[in-house]
Length: 274
View 1 (cartoon, rainbow, N blue to C red):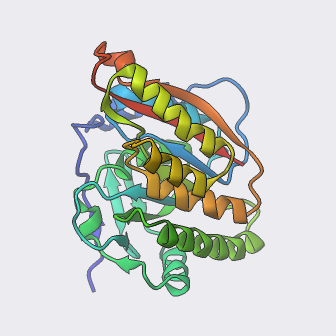
View 2: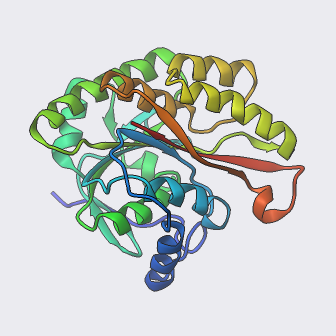
């Protein structure tokens, strides 16, 4: 049986395709004051690095480098299953290949059979890929499991989060450092900077309260086009069951900070859950 190795889909578009340039950029984004802390989860944006790299880097710089990561992202393309992971192989970036954590993937599928092994959902999806160079720079021996979510159903997302927590609790019993839960999400899209900041901070308030159900309700009520709502809800659900007590907003920005266009922006929030 051949090993599936996923080639980069957005290298040279969302981030540099040249390894030396990419490493230099990532190291610059990872520059931060203060010692790293142990975290259960985080929310990081996934736009082109010129727009959201500083927000993502500020989060990853504050986290103790994880050896194992569960990387939850939205399914922008609509391809593949609505609850799709990859359970074998690896993902290439210009910095090398990150192996899939097959044992963790198998445990997740056993606990939550709705998760399907479906590389189609990941083949052209950028939202998980853009996080990997940050994680690779922090931990060269990284392994991970990508999960692409094409549903916003609260009952399904809650059940997934509970299943993740059960699996990771068993991992934590055997390892001193927990698996890091990464939820890849941008915030509100394509409204004015003023409107986007108001909408985003409605959602951020619920995230900082560790309130996944409230986040879901707020996004729906205020029509917030947060693409990674599903990943954030599942991550927060799992983190709470694993004992999370606090969430901190590390950095917030909009694309207007770079583009100068304040009429049609995307919001970016970086949050650490611990």
